[in-house]
Image 1 (tube, rainbow, N blue to C red):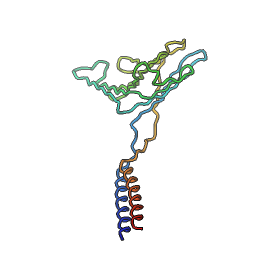
Image 2: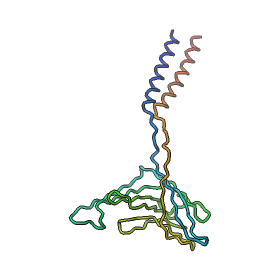
Image 3: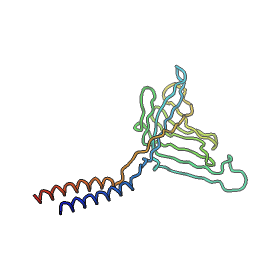
Image 4: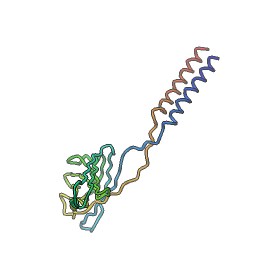
Length: 200
């Protein structure tokens, strides 16, 4: 009788915890953004693309918004200017038979997007190493872009960098209640074994 009661209690508790887990669990997407980037370099064999990849966490966003207030036409015809800047924590770039990473950076790496009147006007990667650098260019405030500069070779390097966002699948993260359910199951099994041994 006592054993049956214990079994029923264990099932009830486990079922309740799993129910909570089933309600609470949702596929949680890790807030990370990834971009592939490339730049065409003119060398002895003509134009050749150099490619790389970067990623950052959305939580590192530093946002700046400027809204023009006043009479008449604002400077450069822009009413609202917005900048979204992020700290890059992963980067790879193939250059001169070598893959450069964040460890080669001379200063913190940043990636930003600029908007005018809610429309994107360009992306800028700010990354410098001893051999090259990526930096921003602009035409007044109506367009911005990233330029690549090679510091040590004769490759033609003044070229705009292209960015392409990588669509990644969200990562499912179990809620703590699911982990708690597994703990309850393990504890219930242990208690059952001890109770059976005590009754023998």
